[in-house]
Length: 319
Image 1 (cartoon, one colour):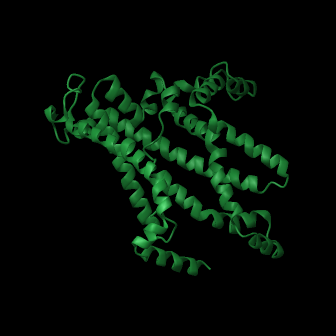
Image 2 (cartoon, rainbow, N blue to C red):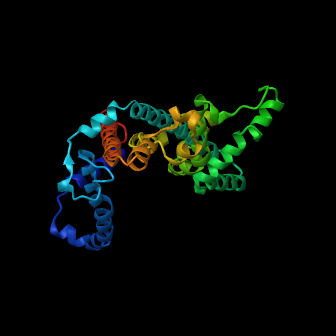
Image 3 (cartoon, rainbow, N blue to C red):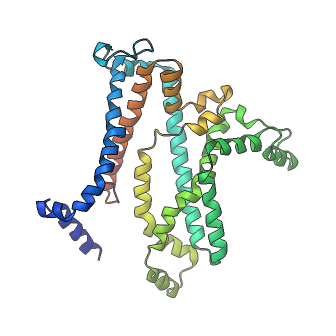
């Protein structure tokens, strides 16, 4: 069955686009026109602003036409890479991103498998519904909850002191070593239930006869998960990991900006916060634009590299 499906896919890929096929798909093409127009207006035309990264753009020259500004080539990119703050920002962005991807992926897969193994359907549905709710909360609310829970008088400090783990309350937001784990925990708490939806869908698509055959052969629950569930959702895991690779430099803005303070500034600054501070607060629009272009270009390169690696190893890929 798998080989037949691959042969059909190859035939479809090699099929030429003819006027007859276009006419057959005419209503789909008509329906896609508004989305193409929206994409051009709001996604591609604004890319004209990328020219600021190759010019000297300050608040005094921002209103000038593009052809009247001073072109500086890649000088803004050079200045950004020479800035120690940008280097530290890049390290913070990569560190937080990899931690979020690793912990978030493992938590979502584990939660989806646990939900799938539940026999009590009512309890399963209630648990699943409750796990979705944090996704719809604003980061302002989530960070407010974290501030209250982790403050000196918060419930976490009270529990740690009462159980004798700490001698006195600890200000978690005053120590840089705790910041990345706090951000990772916040993302896991907020998004695990929502991210598990895709894995649950992949699990339900696994042929039930495989589970029945494993039961007849005497396989236990863990053996079924290991030899049936995990291999069955492996293509989904690979596709989602490939998509997440492109978001490595999108470590987030709200949670770091809202949880950060002067004491943890060395680990809380991300590229988005760097762009905000330099591009808007400091009025250096060119440096901010250059940093944003760097993030976009690196994301595209990472997706292409990861996709080619998956292609060479025979795994699922995006294109």
